[in-house]
View 1 (cartoon, rainbow, N blue to C red):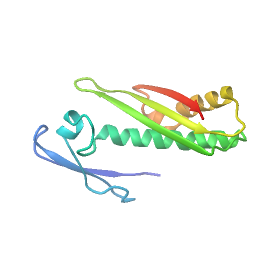
View 2: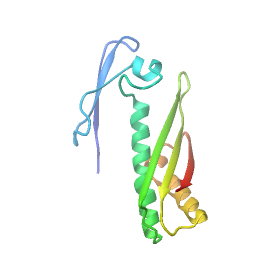
View 3: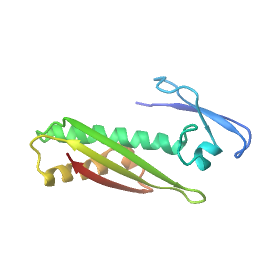
Length: 142
């Protein structure tokens, strides 16, 4: 199975701009990105950036992996809410991804929930792909 996206860029690094498109699904089409949206727009409202897309992939993958582990353990989740925060340090690179999880899982103990969350963090394919950086997890059972 292969998935793809396209990046189109015009101009130099600081004054140029580009777009990102999910080529098969069409889930996003021609999302704008630039030096400013990546390095200068602190609130992130002026366009996307590669780190935001990595965060989306990480949060989505982890949520699915955890949901599978919970169901297999006999505790299907009512809700799994995950935010991933990917940190980019200019001049250094991407240094980490922090997964913040809140889940409603009837009948599960805190210990089992934490164990399955840690297992999902370690085994989700995007976490594995991010092996060169620190992946951390904060898990709260609602």
